[in-house]
Length: 254
Image (cartoon, rainbow, N blue to C red; front, side, top):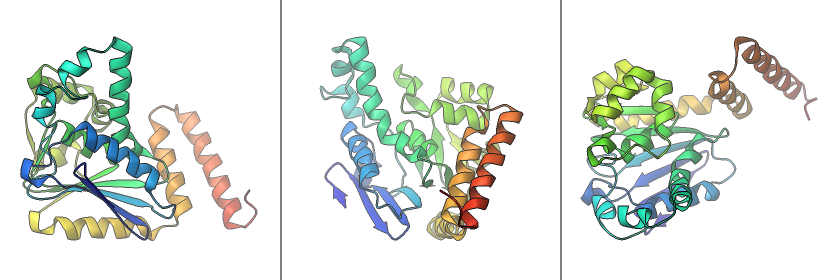
């Protein structure tokens, strides 16, 4: 499925691939792309287990298309500041929905990142559960350079991955991280030479698909909710999840 918004969805069995396809502008993002991304979440076949997010050309995404910021369209500063504060927040919530569906408990999302992943591009990679980086990847939360804040659901993910102090330093300075540092900080699942990015992603996807779907869904839910639970609460969640798995395997589940 190809969208005029500059993003494409392709499904093959249990794997869906979302491709940003504006390589001439390094896959710079627009609100139209974000709406298309959200629409894709409703179009996924029920048997999809893994979603791979990638960018055409030499960069994953160079971030927000600056013509949007400086123009008069729905994502421009002029348009957003013309709204009431609540209307502005609601508009941004719609933008965020293009990213947050990648958190869905029934799928595992994988970002395949080469070249630039700046601002909105970095946040799209953070929206995914796992990130495979090419050695030439460069990440930056550059919103501060425009006097803005990261607002596409990336801040919590960043804190969870690297901790508050490092996340603050990354966001407040807008500096670029290379692939080596990204891996050291826990932002990259694996770093590979650029020529090996596609095979590495394929290997990871195959490994993710090797386990039974219901068990993987339960595991994701256990780990995704762990930070918000006490030790006792997490142990209870483990017991309850295992009970469901045992009953299902025995054929006595609901």
